[in-house]
Image (cartoon, rainbow, N blue to C red):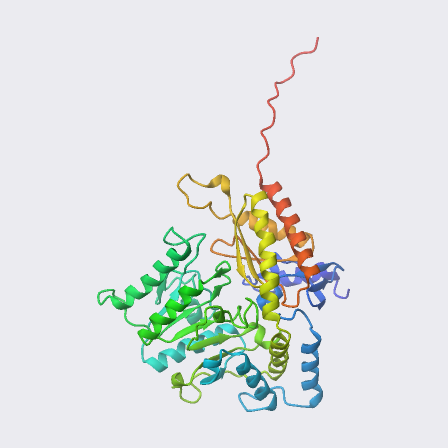
Length: 455
């Protein structure tokens, strides 16, 4: 390979790129070709990609319908950069997008094309509800991840300068109330309701409430459907716009076209990115027309008219819809969850297996470090990192998430076959066993006395 081989490429990357780089640190590979689930590295090795561009690649790498859509625009001579002007490509994308939305929202919706990253769409959503309501505060949830710009970080779980009211996100395994299940979700909803109903809570009605129907970076935590409906009821009663972040969960990932559809909830604002661009940068918000109180130019961006991404996105949305890939994700995801849950009996380090559709998480724990009164063992981030390394050594790409980066996350493309799913799970199980063996303390060495003088 020109330039001194893939090792030299990795070395130059480490020398030239900022310390903020992330995936390149844990995945020291140089991809040169890719198709579907498979990536080929410059070293000639092949990998099964269960990261999928952090959920961006609904159809996997270089799907034929995506490539055909891109080539069609390139060959047509159409302009590639048009700011926010109307084009046939944009019109086709918008029409296909609206065809997939919850009908009640689609019937009365506006779409705002944002800068080409999900975090800018989050910024747009927050600005929109503040403009429409005249209020400033926001409600968000513990464990949330909404992006890396200032406003998106403020409503994410890692915020340090907190100016947002934080609400408990329901989860069974590490329930913030220590009860889990339906009771834990009920307490979470009641806490939200109490803040709004109590005139002495010290919390004013917010401009909006933003939530993920499945927390991804937070550790693959599906929101209970009944809880989502309760949150919708609370926000509607208090005239608070409900903003649902579908950046990672959308386009069939969770077994429904949009994750919010599992609960039957219709939000006021949906934040969309990742898979809607068919592997290319694209981000939008879709919202009820009654919120459309913006002045022209109130939220703009030079690259909000990405024609290639719109063409690729149209092809992806249509392919997922026409081939019922959301239903396929639900079926195959349930099967994969079942097998992963079967690992818990043989591997005490597997604390919890959860997910929805093809958005799956395995939380690793240290049972030896659990105190007698701990409801569940502490997270094991070092073991999770070891599992990730062992997966990569076996040609499987996974990433980590969760509060302590102890959740191994699987985000395979929706085109995953039964045979590929089996290969993924086989490699993961082998990697888990290898990492567990390496981390398990061995038996103490037998006591040996120093040899005495020979006779």
